[in-house]
Picture 1 (spheres, one colour):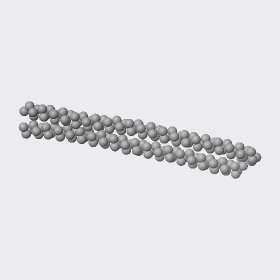
Picture 2: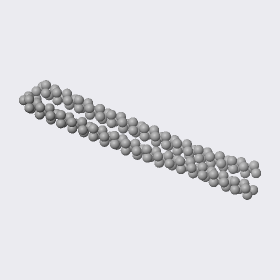
Picture 3: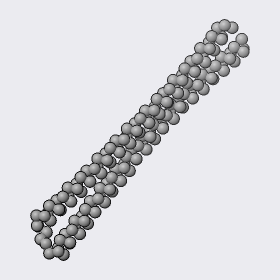
Picture 4: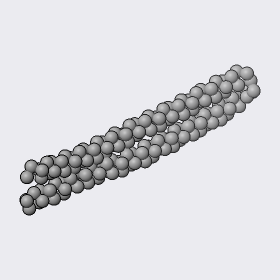
Length: 154
């Protein structure tokens, strides 16, 4: 009978260890999911800042080009309000507006992709943690059941 009690105690310890391992795996998975969420937000913010910089750089080039064109027109003696000159400037403005829109659209798409990938990774971490927890619980229950069955047989 003392051996049965020792075996039962061992089964309880084993069950506790199985539960604790599953619980710790679930907690680690939650932590990893939280880290991934923060990483995703940081990467999205970096992409947003990069797009803003590209936007500003492109606009700065436009302003410099426009100033150069005005200077060239002035040197040639033509009137800046001439229809052909104004048409050229309007066309240049349209090109720049389209470029800026493309930069914004690309940034939005990249940011959406980062968030989507981050959410998928977070979900995977949570599923792994949940599975580890359930496995630990199942092992604990199995250990207790086997111990009870062994004690019943003795």
